[in-house]
Image (cartoon, rainbow, N blue to C red):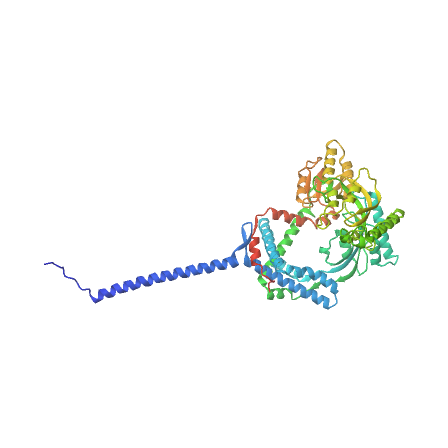
Amino acid sequence: MTFRPPVTKPTRRRTRQVDTRHALYMNLAFGAASLAAVALLSGVLFANWYADHGAALASVGGVAISKDAVRTRAAVNHARDERLLQDYDTMRNQGQMTTTDYGQVTSSITAAEASTQLYSDALDQLKEELTLQQYADKNGISVSDADVDAQIAKDGTLPELRHVKVIAVEATPTPPASVPAADQLAAAQAKAQAYLDSIKTGGKKWDDVFTDSQKTGVVSSSGDMGVSAESALNLDPDIADAIFNLKNANDITPVFKGQDDIFRFATITQIVASYADSGWKDAIGQAASGDEYRRAARAEAIKAAIRTSVEGQFVTGATASRHVLEIHVAAGYSQVGDGPEAKIRLMIFAPNHDTSGATALAQTDPAWAEAKKRADDTYAALQKDMTQFTTLAMDTKTNDDPYVASVGGDLPWLPGTLFTGSASSQAGLGMTTVPAEIFKADLAPGLLAPILEPAMGYVVVDFQGVRPAPAQRIADAQLGLGTGSDFASMAAKYSESADVNNGGDMGWVTHYQLDPDVEAAIFQAPVGGLSRLVQNSNGYYLYKVLAEENRVPEAAQQAKLKKLVFDKWLSNLTAATNIWTDTAGLTAITPASPTP
């Protein structure tokens, strides 16, 4: 017989307690699971939101620029562009500007509204603003609310525009020289003055004189420059100021000598008065974000304050300056190791007036004989009067190559590789016979009898000279200086800078006037000594430092420096700042069409 202990039957109250605890635990577990799920979902949502909105597209000095910041700035910029288009449309409808001028002014605005450009510009602006803000914070530069209001008013005021026409005369150096001599400069100045007098006192029309100037000499930056504000006019400060000081349409400036040794004078055909848009700020605020626009305006005001500070140091204030001589050999079209360069003028006489069809046409075809006859006739005419070369070369009924005609037949100094390179790939002229002729030893300058180029036609060449390649010329200058030759004489022999007629004397140089590599070489050289050789995309540079002073630039130099110093200073500041950009991220958020 087995003994079993008695089983105590649970009471009803104890059963209820167990059930309650079980339910509580289940509820707590479910609640925890629910909270975890909500947290996970929230985390996913936040991660997705951050990836789409808050993630950085760039950083400046450790400060991030978010995707939404770029989107918001792009929207502000788009709103500003649209308002500008409306303002110019109003001015056109009121007859203040012509349809042609309207198209010129608004084309750049329309181009900036393309989404890729719009978003890229927005990010670039934000990076620059952060760079300048960090500089301002370190240097105690700030702006007031009144400064911001003034900047907004400036934004909403279209500057005065003038429709500008320019006639320019460039002196032609005698090869192998690259820079005109003093008498050639004087002749170019006299020619420019004669053109000016023929309009002012001789009764000639501007456009007729301009056409004549193209036929009688090499010209640059000439013709109809369209409408422009003074700040955007791509001319030297003295002539730009003179243009915007003219009182009436068709008034003419005096002749000015440019920094490039080209003589210019200008007229204006229309003055488009400044236009203040009273609804500017409200329009931007309604179309985009008024607060973001004000932040952008504040950044512009800070930039203006920093510009004033920088120009106070390096333009109008006393600053470290060096008196410098230079030798500059331009890079031209040569690569290091290329052989000599030749200078020619030419005209091409193609069968059937078509250079592209010459190769496929048998040379027994009568069109070849006709092309040779035209070349022979032109050669005979030029033997009697070489002054007609430019006029004949520009005549597309005579010269069958459109590009050659557009430059009056005048080609730059070119190495043999560019004569023989493929014309179809734009790597050269596609010539073989001409370079074989012009690079012959001891060939004297002068007019050459027509040369057959089987790939294009007969070529009439005015051979002007041969010189060593740029790398060889600067090496020769260094050798001369190293063996005791005077710097000024080496500059006169080899330099291609405009100051060559003054012994290479480029005057006083300040910081942020020249490119950084050139400036570094000048300011690192010993006073009284030579700089190291600088090579960049513009060619080769050597300098001699005559003296150093802490001085205030002269007025003429200040005018030039105001166009140069701040941008170069800002470029240096940007290069020294730790800036990171997510280019792929910018592409990913750029919409297919502009911000509405």
